[in-house]
Image (cartoon, rainbow, N blue to C red; front, side):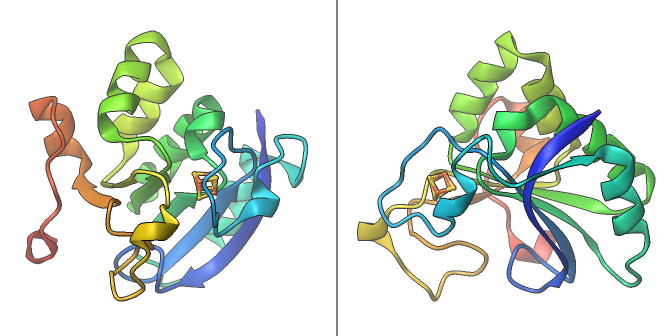
Amino acid sequence: MSLRVAGLINESLVDGPGIRFVLFAQGCPLRCPGCHNPEAADPRGGVEMSLAEILARIKGVRGIDGVTFSGGEPFYQAEPLARLGKEILRLGLNLVIYSGYTFAELLERGRREEGTARLLSCGWLLVEGSYREEERDLSLPFRGSRNQRILDLPSSLEQGAAIEWKQEER
Ligand code: SF4
């Protein structure tokens, strides 16, 4: 199985807590004004990579705390990313997922699409909501605008409602 990838970063400190490998998924149906990554919007852009190839690259990076799926819109390719997410958990790494959709929207979508439900179930944190230029705030950790929230995904799924992540709980 493969997916379209906009880019990979071996080590990032700004895409979630700790040192993280980041996968920027290609393709996003949203058109947020001031989008931080407009070249990732076209679903036919980027490069096609197999899950095995990406996994090998992740395994080759030493000392990371986890992996982040960013974009583009990761849930646009939920099925392959859910499979990759499962393998990432098997490596003992945690998973942070960024999405332009809110948790409530993804929960609803997950009732219709198995890939979305499975991808949600792999995540530790969800940075939810699309970037809004009018709420831009560069002082916020791991996100670009004030409407975006960092959710504790397992707790949110258990409660069926968005539960914000408290940093000290890490
Ligand atoms: S969701 Fe993210 S990638 Fe998609 S248009 Fe909005 S800011 Fe850009």
